[in-house]
Amino acid sequence: MTADLLINAIIAGLLLGGFYAAVTVGISISFGILDIVNIAHPAFIILGAYIAYIVNQTVGLDPILTAFIVLPAFYALGAAVYQVYFVSFEKRGQDALRGLAFFFGLLFVTEVMLILVFGVDYRYVKAGYIDQTLRFGFVDLPLRMLIPCVISLGMLAVLQVYLSRTFNGRAIMAVAQDQQALQLMAVDPIRIKRIAFALSIATAALAGAFLIVIQPVEPSVGREFIGRAFAIAVLGGLGSMTGTVIGAILLGIVESITSTFYGPSWAPAVAFGFLLLTLAFRPSGLLGR
Image (cartoon, rainbow, N blue to C red; front, side):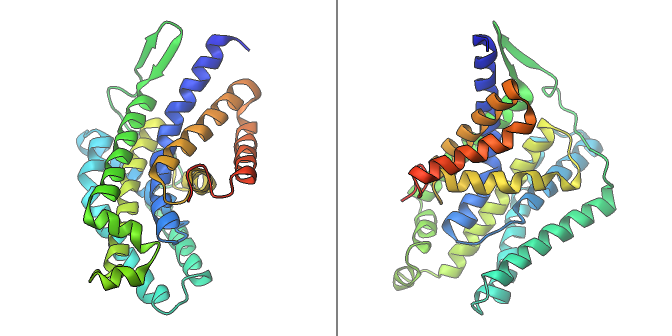
């Protein structure tokens, strides 16, 4: 184990963790704050990746810029999905097992539709920075990882400010604790939940663009991130944006070091073992309340 190889593995883990944070932030909001087990979240990420691919292939627009342009559309999609979920399940008190089945079906339907349209071939995008790497001595910083990491951390910083400094943001945090108290303040908890869930889906557009910049995608690749996303959300502390970042970076570093020195096949096992050890000593997560 050489020092330069270890340092590069740690840096690669930091960059990977930034991407994992973008993947997980939507889960942290829906599962950690709203208590909605949205296992279909990776499907929205893949949908965002394919939209970035279509626009990139059609007009040559940068995939990450495309994601910012389609953010309002994903926000509206998230609001519509929550409304269907609320009317069909939450309003009737059937949001446990049947609600979970709803999101599983949404995941399956989205994946099948993408397969029917695009097939199972891997798709990739073109951008000037994807094949470029910054080198500082023996340290390599591939831009395809660095740029998504930086933008991801910026997105989480903006969300943290929104949740802690704005009225709607504080209402989102409050709706997870006491809906009746929120109603006494003349705030509709359903509207607040709709906003929160829409935000969680909007983040999927950016995460999808990051994903297709980092690697080629095909419709079923989102399944790889279901376990990781929920693991990071639990590890960081449910509902904590800062905890999400810390959990994602820790998991990214553990996976990167394991892949570098012991092989990629060991990375998931070691990463989830690390999660179990952490929760054994800190059941609420790193920054959980």
